[in-house]
Amino acid sequence: MSENKLIISADKCVGCTKCVKQCPFAALEMDGKLAVVNDSCTFCGSCVDVCPTKAIILNRAEQKGVDLSAYAGVWVFGEQKNGKIQSVVLELINEGRKLADSLDEKLSVVVLGNDMDAACQELLEYSVDYVLQIDAPELADYAAEPYAKVLSDIVSKRKPSIILAGATSIGRSFLARVAVEVKAGLTADCTGLEICEKMLHQTRPAFGGNIMATILTPNHRPQMATVRHKVFKEATKNGGCGGKIEKIAVDDNKLLTSRTKRIEFITDNETTINIAEADIIVSGGRGMGKPENFALLEELANALGGAVGASRAAVDSGWIPYSHQVGQTGKTVGPKLYIACGISGAIQHMVGMNSSDTIIAINKDPDAPIFEIASFGIVGDVFEVVPELIKAIKNK
Figure 1: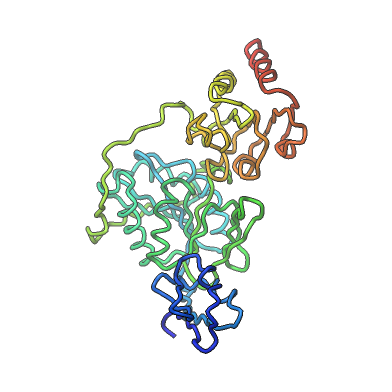
Figure 2: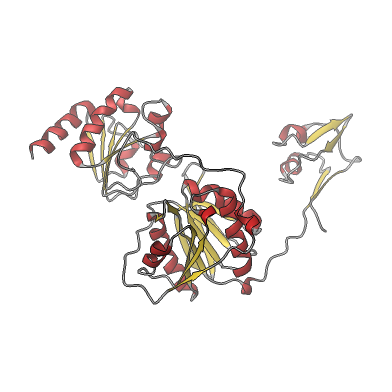
């Protein structure tokens, strides 16, 4: 069998239209009293389950696996901005080293950019076996098309067993393209990675963070995952392990072409501190009441030398820009101190900050879920508690 087929039996179909109503892609329609399928079908099988007369049969094409023995090595995508390796790469090196050691394989960091010699040399001070350097002027600034085409070409030739990238705006936007090109799966936003029986177990939040799903790729390679920033600890410089830099030339210039061009990069001047990198974060939620009240949190953050964060409710209300949002649909943070002000503690928010070293929650509702994970809880009005905190910090 070379392709998927959805077959509808004219003898069994009674024209009840249940399959038409069930199909999420409008791939079924009625021709008189007979259901017929159009080109929009994705072969999801939802129509098969609802058909009361078993008139629908889904024949799936045989999935052929790959020769798993041909794949070896753990690769980390060395994300860079303006020639500087991003901190999420150090987190992935730390975790990738453990995975590579478990498999008795090599750990490589793949760096795409231009004039990246110094950055690649610095990577050798960590526990990496190889730094694969792909230098070209067209790769100086991130662009999804050339990055995806170049990395896909190298992956197809060298066949790594595992590829990890940060679940950043860059990692999320182009690694899926690579997965499609090399016919592999991709698990997004992982919070846990582990080798069991020579296979990568990829764990991520599902159903709004209410459960943790572990995903396996038993028949295809490479095993690919994007990993949430601040979930793992950063690797530290240890003098390296005798790793080497290998420069890889791009043989086909077509791989470097792009339909888009970076004209200008505009930084967010709302804050001088990136919350994903901050050691102290003061966050506000719906309990702050209105946008003007975030000035109080800014004052506390400034007194502590920290950054201002927010819950999705505050961002959706237009009180503060999205760049400050902490949570499943925002940024994952892991500061030394996280102060939650007027945040009830929806599971989606807690997924993004529960790895903080110390959590202080301020809320007038004693039953707020945030208190369940807080290191210290203050039941009280945020507009009374925070000014007292500011006063005490300034006096000290």
